[in-house]
Length: 563
Image (cartoon, rainbow, N blue to C red; front, side, top):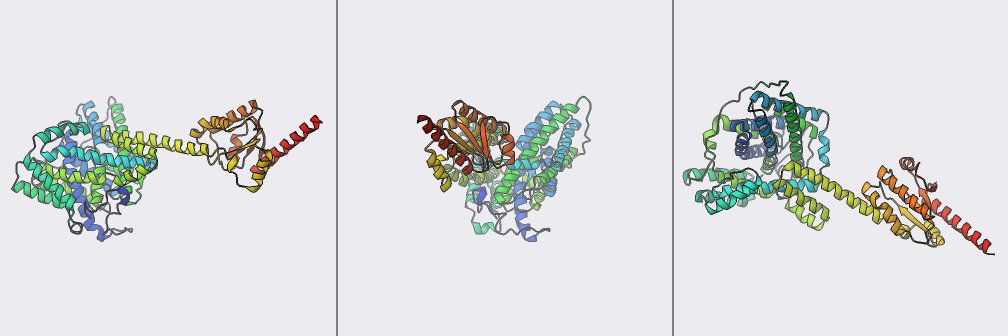
């Protein structure tokens, strides 16, 4: 399975490729080729990122590589998302760099926070806290994914012209583009164009044997080394085994270490489980969130013991793995093994890989991550979903991933409550739409003096806020009875109960009787102390019949008095 033959939408992507075989309790050798392709390709993509993240953290490039190796290996082996690739990520590095600076470069203290963070993640998994991330709505996940795609493209744009962002983040990448375009390295431009042509034009039938990304990497590197040696490349790769770092916690630093560990643990857990959701959408599978936290925790704990920077599930590398064919956890292990080989053996070879070649591969990856199919559907669907998608995408690109998801979840929840409230309020007055013959006959006999309000399903607090105003607007001068039908309402919350109290109070002031139809014990308990109800009935027909009886009795009394 190649990068080029995959659909652009995560929801349309098949599980691991056409050649993938379903897993039983044992590894299926039929998946071996796909896992090797996926793992190696993800490793190639991870290499420059691990070096860059290590350098940005303050711990050095080799710490970034070992973070990718250790966290990637243990999270793949013990985690709950088979296709996930883990390693250093942007959000984690931002926090870790702050820890590095606050602890003045004392490695025993710094990596103690990483060890404690890993242990906390293990505890999160054992306490089964991971399931809560599954509540993230799809528009949020789609906006998050598409934002990652945009970031990837922007970060690599200047490298296609031989430049490189001087400052981190999306804004730094944008600032670097005009200068790179104005002063291009023609060798880099040629290699970037060659790579883009290969990854976008690689035939599907060829991809069954060699992924387009690997072909582009090989061809681009050979051409760059032999014909265009002045194009910027990765350069010397640091090599060597990691040293054991004995964690140290003192009374003066315990609070700082614990605070940093909690932030790293929470951020790493959210980052990893969001990536697991992305993997689920692409592979049509379901990850085990608590097991994933345990795997990530073990990886970070071991990483901290060997002076490696912490990591989490890496969205970009996971997507690369899946789109290149990765099917099982072996692909994540292969990714780690590839990086280990680079560190120990292949440093001189990897050193000549041109930046422009990697940039071309990543641009294609970024394009494939864009959830174009969902965007097309969202344009025809609810505007609220489209708004959530756009906001999450924008915050992902220009702020950070975690903030984007938090904002997206809040907006999606508010949009859902608003949609539910509108539906409940639109269907609140059902007097004219009742089709039961017995009820219709009773309403006709009442001659417009009975108004029936029905609550369909649990009443949301969003609807409760406008319920009183809607009731006042629907009542007419002739109304003598209100029938509140709670037959389809399993329960009421405090907001809804207060709204019902307000309606009964308004009805009492207007000399309108209120009947209720209650079938749920929970609803009955909540309404027990609400004043203003004359009677409660088991069915709407009974309530209407009693109201009509009282109206007719009143009419007869008025006629007798007239005589």
